[in-house]
Length: 234
Picture 1 (tube, one colour):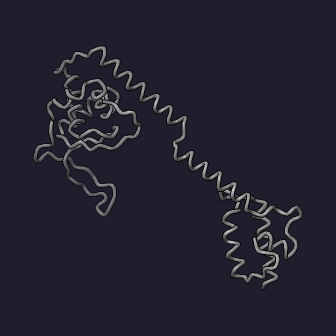
Picture 2 (cartoon, helix red, strand yellow):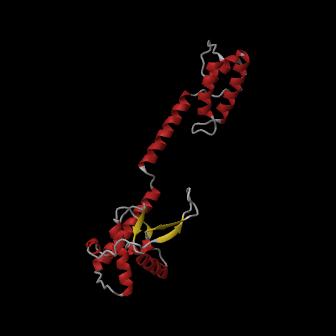
Picture 3 (cartoon, helix red, strand yellow):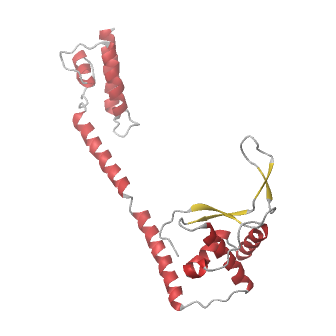
């Protein structure tokens, strides 16, 4: 019962306060956490055996724990709720399965349950652990397909911008016609300030050095062109 996924989800396991304390005490003695206890049992014990095991069950009526609320309108106030354990495990397990696995861990430790582990079971668990480690290493080494596609799309857009954008002028922008060229207007155009500002906003978003397609040289010449056109139009 292992998962090749490294993604984990939070499990809320309702249980009696006695059961909760026993699990936490065992985890502390073993130097692990409660999730590790459940995980170790589910790696070694066949799923059918866990499913057939006795469920310690939900907390009995009247069994409550008191906590202090840490947020919200009632922050700082005590609140009585059903006892529970909070674990992080791979997705796909039922609350009852996790609770049974924890009960098995307690019983194994107490010597109340003996289990003969076949060599094949150990080898299967080792293979599952190795597969999980290899899968993690592969995911870390190979970016997801979505990321590769995003990079390809980004590069394609960058090439389009480079092909469509103006070529920076060697001596900078000094004349009215040069300013029209940099701003993308035809040589015979006589745009008003509204059209100039609209064109500037679009081009500035593209050529600003902080954008994905930014160019410090183009942005500098774009600003120079804006100043020249502003003087001629105003």
